[in-house]
Length: 321
Image (cartoon, rainbow, N blue to C red; front, side, top):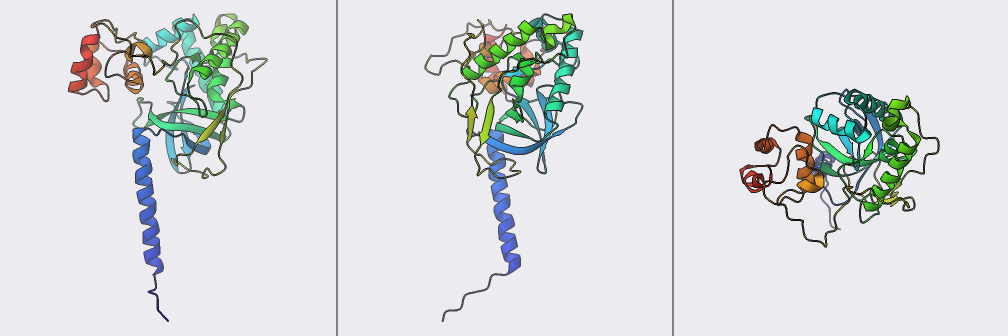
């Protein structure tokens, strides 16, 4: 009979701890780089924080705290810390800057109410930047009523505008962008939210809300997982008949060559994400960082944007006036 060496309980505990540490390290690296797979975070809880607004908020997942920023939608600012962006948002809704702040506050309260119960987050851990020291990630957020971004737009509290990604199960963001445009058109026609400020209908909600997008996580998703990549499935509503508005920033097809931008053409403070990404060396993530860092005194201030070092600055600076 061959005797087997005994493994002490202490050694087993050390081994398990080592495995967990290594797993966590791999997960964290994946989070920083931006995973190609959807990370599904279930049973998330809203955290009250002064920095929260309609499209960006603090949340806890187990023992972890994150800041999430919604894909594809943009709610007005809640203060005057970013005047250039606030002016742009007010112009979009055809209202004054003080009124835009009112809409932003209403959107903040709407999101707080919708997230008062546990919710699910779908994210690829793509960096959304922000003023906080805590990392902020782009995400789709599902409440018991469906996609939060769609609900904000349908109630006139956010615009169809923002960093794009194809929702889980879709190959392109275009279908979701078109649906958001339809929801925005309906809110505008009903004069509710930001579209109804001048009619005293800021806090009026949609009377006939459309079915909102629903995300379905696989049964194998770990409870309270904070960063385990898991595939997701998106159940979109039928493609709307209303065509996307002219000039909308639809996702460009990868089969077409990148549009060439003449030197000195781009205005660093007013350029859209699409215009910024025509500059060689600027992708969607960098474009979002530039937009978030506005306003600039001049294009020379691009050096202060995270990720723009001396070499990249020298490469992109000639394209800005």
